[in-house]
View 1: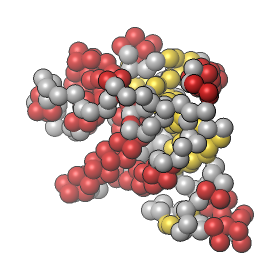
View 2: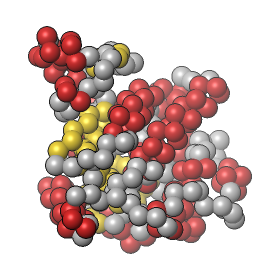
View 3: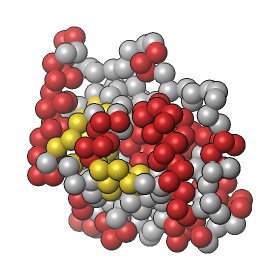
Length: 272
């Protein structure tokens, strides 16, 4: 949990009924603040240069809805210019990364509502993808659909050995965004990207590692030790150890891949 000194200068209500207090309110009602802040759908904690970002919809296996995206977008914007943040780890509370988009919410939206949801999702994910420090997704249990796209926005993905990853929209008759396809294609190449999108299969941790979808696998009870080890190696390799920032050049380019595999190609193969 973030300390109150790092809170916004204004209080703000969120769609789930939670509220971030102003500094004045926090000073007078610290216990109330602590209780209400725990209701947030996305938690931010900065410690020793690492920003921990965790989804907090445990009862819904951290399914991503508009409220989650709004909180994630706001928090990332707050830390975007923070030069003391040297790395970010993204994970899910309750031992699950993210089971996908909130299907109940999507089912209630009209065409314009779906369009706004996708715009919010891609705008928020682009913030994470373009952060100037290394980012790590810590995948436990599930990273499906929109949850997998969130993981793909990170530089590195470390998964527990019992995790499942997949693009499940094909089984729902849905078509994902061009940005999602580009991120998946960049990670696993055309053959496996097509297989995952067209069939909606869920791959296990070993397969995910073999095809390049994740960089490391770890026993569930050791996964955060694995993350700490990777962060330690990255920090040691950084000159003076004061910062760990992305350099310039092709390795850090996040522009969508152009060309041969188009959204039109995908839509013809999807049911629905």
